[in-house]
Length: 292
Image (cartoon, rainbow, N blue to C red):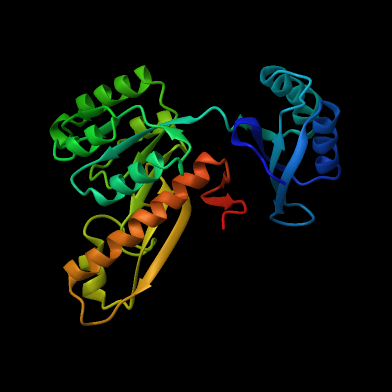
């Protein structure tokens, strides 16, 4: 069935698996005029597992406002079943800041897809610890902020960035090859809302210069990993990965050229799924619904 982005809403649920959840959720939405267009669910274990569900519905004939719908769902369904849940309306775009350093490939992929309306988000700002890519931001009419960031001034730099992001009412951050480690104190403000692209197929080759590490190990596959940022470097829940086959004939620079193409595609897919509310974080993993 065709769904219009302007009238689509999405419901994400996590809870202990128990009888009646799907019935009560769908009956509730039917009662208030919602038309369900997609429903996907997953259970970790059929007896004592955790239940996950993503549901899309049309809001054209809703008999409640969005605020009333959320309030009624909280009392009538979520509380009795002890649900962790969220309802998001596709017409309300997430505000995503992009952090970048000097590499332009991931940033340009995001801006290009965004300009073509493939990524339904607002970009209130691009933040960089170098001024090099300001002209790209200007060409897409996105405000660019150069905030220097290195160990000696990290606390001050992060305070500046947090002030900016708060002023812009940012929902999440995309690290498009931002080559600085964010502090745990900064990360906690955006828990499970910071997406990073790591130029390696994690958990292999964490940290800096993974292409050189891969070349040293003589690997036959290189890849990229999009993941949520946590206080543990490159160990956050993985959203998406991809690889390409390579040979012994390729040096670190050649591996990097091939890898950059994978990086930008993997990051774009992860961002798209995040914007479409297709991801639920569970422990240190992700449930990604119907992403392909």
